[in-house]
Length: 257
Ligand code: NAD
Image 1 (cartoon, helix red, strand yellow):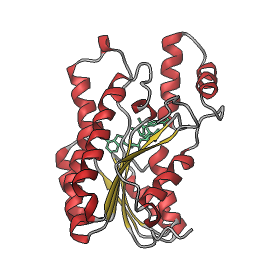
Image 2: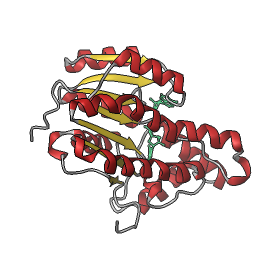
Image 3: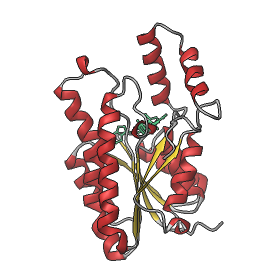
Image 4: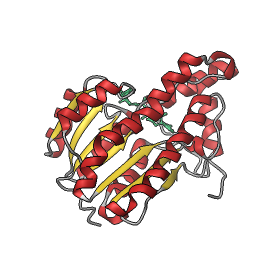
């Protein structure tokens, strides 16, 4: 299947590790050029990916929870064809130990990063009459996850935002979708498993097995399995998919939607 991604300009958020890194490599394998964004070490990763796949990649050290950083990023990058909005996840915790500070930080990180990235890069896509915006959310939008109050709440707003953008700009050749991964083996998920293990007085491997057993496939995902869906949604072949959330969770959520 020709995904027609060769030479497309793709901005990948949170691209130095985990799902974002797998997404950057999957786009590079299709011949797309990359703007690699994360808080640090992006130049190093961009060089590595560029050499390995023979594409052009630039690194941008940028905190996507900050408006000033996104303005600088836009000035550096110019216009892009594809935006993959992704950052690290908000802190775990319960209502009793998450204060206003944590809620505001999570709001800036999880929702405002997407709002500000879209504000910066959508005008170029509109002029070009082509674009793809994909936001990474979580299976928590289908089924809330214990101790992830911030994620469970604020990611719903990202879903609403993307659905609204699709209604407003769907006729401009731009699609807006969310990908909602289930538990995927990255450093973030290993930390969450350890956090749950401590909270429940169990061993990490017991928690990991409990999660795996809840899925239909009886295992956690690997980052490439999420990345492949993102690359497909960004392609020409997915031109009629917009305003959707695609669940990639091995059957973790029991919702029929
Ligand atoms: P990760 O922690 O392995 O990687 C996060 C990446 O984002 C890193 O490159 C990090 O440097 C970057 N990042 C963090 N904060 C940033 C910021 N403020 N500005 C710019 N870059 C920043 O995480 P992951 O497991 O790959 O998850 C990615 C996203 O997907 C997170 O929001 C996570 O909550 C969500 N998610 C993950 C899973 C999973 O199982 N791994 C499941 C559902 C949703």
